[in-house]
Length: 284
Image (cartoon, rainbow, N blue to C red; front, side, top):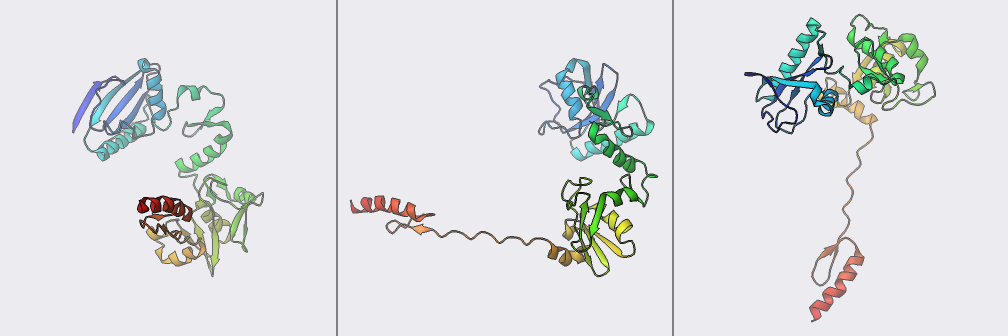
């Protein structure tokens, strides 16, 4: 593996061919960011550093970038980048900023956006409360307890949702059946009772509700959307029976042949229009 400590201009036509790990320094505040690039193979950034890269393109004089590692294998570069960022996070170096937390300065100064107090990510003010609850649950292992789901307590979920045993669906306070991007923004919720087992399809919130709220005394099985590739493949028949049947392929429309040259057409009108000309040619 080669180690490069060299500076290069962003708009320079000389771009490293092999994938590489780079470091960008913001000269205005001294902050540094670690990222990776797949070299000349498409000129597309691997990691989510789009915000700082747009800033670099807008004001290239305020940034410096140098290559730290270069390797022909893209998987090696991604692993190096991951380990390097993880080590920088471990030492808590204030000079380095996490690539996921860097936001363009225009958004930083925008009053419509507010920073999460747990991860520093900038979000719109109306979305920050829900993000902070889920962020705290993801980052703090002590906060994730059996009676909470992504920061929501047992009582909060009980007040927000209701379950109908007849239909087998979860409804919100307005009586609407939860679908994609409703509630907590995950995939759709679908619950079905089969004997003493509840089958929960593709939604961790539904699994939590069934296990901790509605039916704590019955066995719960969580089935992913892709049944063929999970541990519950033996339940594929039960799951398939609740899903819509695949429509059969559309029947191929009959073709119409010209009586003179045997050329086929999709519509009979084309045959009549073509047949007159074809017959005239054949009579000559």
